[in-house]
Amino acid sequence: MASQNCYDVTQWPVGDPHEDVGAVINSIIADIKRRQDDPDRGDGGKPGAVIHIPPGDFRLRTQVVIDISFLRITGAGHGFTSSSIRFNTSREELAKWHELWPGGSRVLVDLPPAHGADGAAFLVAREGDPRISSVEFEGFCIDGLHFTGTEADNPENSYRNGKTGIHVASANDSFRIVGMGLVYLEHGVTVDDADALSIDNNFIAECGNCVELRGRGQASRIANNLIGAGYDGYSIFAENYGGILVTGNNVFPRGASSLYFSGVARSSVTANRFHSFYPGMLVLSDGCAENLVSSNHFFRDREPWEPMVAFDNGRDDLFGLVHIDGVNNSVIGNHLSLSIDPGHLKPAGERPVMIHVAGGTGNYIATNHVVATTEAAGTTDAPASACFATQVGALLASGTGTPLEVTTVRVGEGAASNTVLDSGTAAQVVLDRSANAFRPTPGVEAG
Image 1 (tube, rainbow, N blue to C red):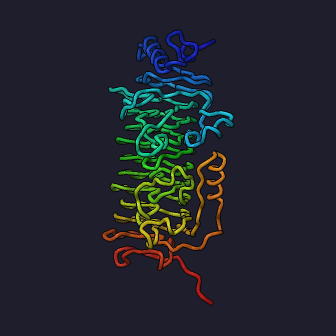
Image 2 (cartoon, rainbow, N blue to C red):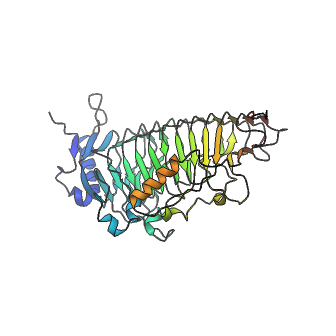
Image 3 (cartoon, rainbow, N blue to C red):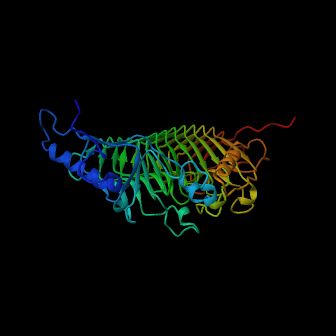
C-alpha cells in the first residue's frame, strides 16, 4: 500500500520541477502541513514525509523553506564532478569530454545573489517549541553553477556568488546531512545552534566554505566526508560548540583552514587526513579548551595547479600548520609532513613552524612526528588529466627531497604551564623552559 506521505517531485501536480523545483517542494510541504494538522492524534499526529528527487536536472528559482520536523529530502545520487577543472579547461579540450556538468539528482541553484539565509537554496527555519527536529538531506547534488566574484581574473575562480546550499537558521535537533554533493556554492552547509547534528559521507568541495557550525551547539558529528574549500574560506568551521566529533574526513586543499575552531570546548579531532597549500591548516582560537587532536595526518605542500598559484590565505609560515590559542588542549600522536621548496616560504630565511602554541596554558603537545623536506614541485594549467597527474605526482613524491630545517613546536611568549614531550629535538623546539615543561625527542648520537 502506497503511503500518502511519500512524494516524488516529478509526480506532483503543481508546478514544473525541471523549471523550479523549489516551488514544487514548497507546495508539497504546504500539503504535508495541511494534512498533518493535529499535533496529537493517536499518540502521533505529525509523522512528516519523504520527498524524492529522481535523477535529472532540476532548476531552483524559489528558495525552499522547511518549517516542519521529520522531513527527508532524498535523491538517487550526489552527482559531484569538478566544475573548477571544467571552467579552467579550453573549449578544444572540453569538446572531447564525456560529460560537462554534475549529474545524479541535481538541483541547479538559480537564485539571485544574496547574503546569509536569503541566499540559501534550502532554508530551515522555525521559531517556538519544540526545536525543529529530524530534517534530513540525502543523496542529491546542489550545484551553485557559477562563481561571479571579482577576486580573480577568472570569476569562476573567485569562490563567491552569494549562494548557500543548506542553511539551518533555527535551533535544531538530530538533523542529518548524508551522501550529498555540493559544488560551486559560496557556503555549502551552514547550521546554527545544532544539537546532535550528523554530517556524514558527503562530497562538499569547490565551495567557498564547506561546513560551518555557527551560533552555539553541542554533541554533533562531522565524519567520513570528502571536503575542500576555497583559498579564503573554511573547509570545517565551528564556533561556541561543545562535544563535536570530527573524524575520518579527507580534507583537500585549498581552504584557508582545513579546520577552524573558535571558542570550541571538549571536542575530538581524530583520524582525519588534512592536506593544505598554506599554513594554518588547523586553528584552535578564542579560548578553545580541552579539545583532543590526535592521530591525524597533516600534509602541506605548494599549489601545483597554475590557475590557482597566485592565491593563498595570507598567513606566513611562522603562524604554524597547527595554531593554538587556548587552554588545556591535547595534541597527541599526529603526523605532520611539509614538502616545499624553501623559496616559497614566508618570511624568507625563517624556519617554518609546525605546531604553534601562540597563547594559553595547560596545553599538552606529545609524541608528534614531523617530516620536513624540500621539494620543487612543478605546476600545470591544462588539460584536466594533467592537473590530476600533477597533483597525484606531488602527493606520491617522497624520499626525494633533502631535509628542511623547521621549528617543530613553538610556544609563544606569555604562554605558560604548557607541556611539550617528544615532539622535536632541543634544537627544533622553541619555548621558555622556565615557564613550560619540555622533554626533547632523543637525537642520534655520533659514534
